[in-house]
Length: 227
Image (cartoon, rainbow, N blue to C red):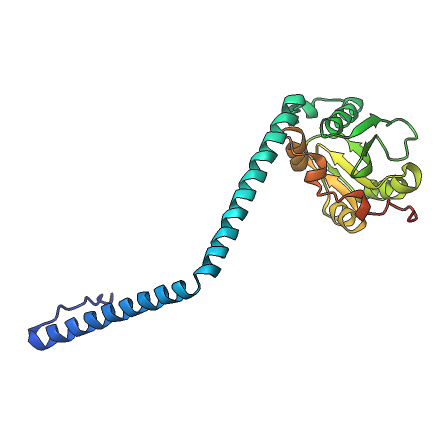
């Protein structure tokens, strides 16, 4: 059988009405006392509260300024060059390498395409005054295809020793195997899959922002001895 829901019964008789009124009055008194105590605490600590409010306001303003500045910079990049994923999928291997070079140039790097037979796992090399040298290995493939760990090993083995790179990355319009991404993360070989490529090429996020690259002064070259 279904259990009956209990309903609050209205007070009956003078005694119950007086008891209910007393409870309500006690609650009102407690609320008034709590409000008064809060007001006294605020009055005693108003400098601290004002400072906290000021810090919060400054932080919110700084966040707003950074957000709108970043949006403006992205818009400027996209006005220079914007590539859709559909357009990238239609490119050939060589055209894909040129596209990556152009995206680096758009982001403020000086870059050149170097990919050819015997390129030692480097298709594009870029230079940035604050970030150093980057080597990109391009893997243009069918949508849904995955790049494996072997590519990451090759790039790691040549980026620093053969090309003097501070940063190494593999870029594909497909995806990476789980092992490839894990190995790359562990050994500092960045990976740009289809989702990241969309942010870079279509939405105007700079590659160094996308990969959160640190300044060169805080990083040693890949596989190179410290200066």
